[in-house]
Amino acid sequence: MSNLPLVSKKSPEDFRNIQVDDISFGHGQFNVIAGPCAVESEEQLYHIAEQISDMGIPFLRGGAFKPRSSPYAFQGLQKEGLKILKQASESYQLKIVTEVLDTSLIELVYPYADILQVGARNMMNYQFLKELGKVDKPILLKRGISATIKEWLAAAEYIMLGGNEKIILCERGIRTFDSSVRNTFDLAAIALAKQMTHLPVIADPSQGTGVRSLIEPTSMAAIAVGADGLMIEVHNKPEEALSDGFQSLYLDQLRALLPKIKAQTEFSGITFNQSLSKINI
Ligand code: PEP
Ligand code: MN
Image (tube, rainbow, N blue to C red; front, side, top):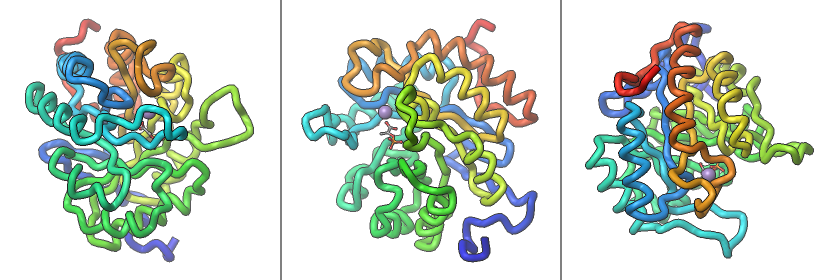
């Protein structure tokens, strides 16, 4: 793939770390990112953040600006949501992963985020990708809803060409004919991307399947094919969530899943960057 010189592997063993402050991503370092689809209130986020921190998970996700299919659906708390994220992350020493929806919002979101999420709907917004190339924080780049693996890597190349080398790729399912799942979770894409690029590749089984009961099996499978991390939606009251409650784990389900994730990473010979000391195994 010499036409993508920056993101392509230079040799089969060319895997690189992305450093997020003191935490390493990729090249055998596995991390979990968890949190609600959207920040909904102070009470909701603090409750979830406290639990996530207690589970030893280093990264809290939560959308303050939400890209919704319907303009009438909850669009996120926006700046208020960012403030809640920041306060909760400081209270519980968590790093924040949150979406930036377009170029005009980079400046606003930047100080609140440790990792800037680029959503699937934006993966082909090339002008936006160029702007993200100028940012000095890691970018979590979701795969587009119908993007080929080469298009996904080309999107990463756009960011890298601008000077930002801290990119984490995220498989989040693709649109297919099958309506029994929200998206078709593309496991081979994770394995193939890892063969093509040195960048870390993580999996989002929540958007990837849209089915709560599929989060556990697809998480295990993602690790087995080489994922460097998982991003999982979780909610204190999924049935009342303002977005994606149907695919969000209950907090207890996440707690029960972590030891299984750890065991699977051990089987794969990679390091699980998380202490499970407070979790009863
Ligand atoms: C999300 O992570 O909540 C989200 C909207 O993701 P995607 O861009 O993959 O649909
Ligand atoms: Mn979501």
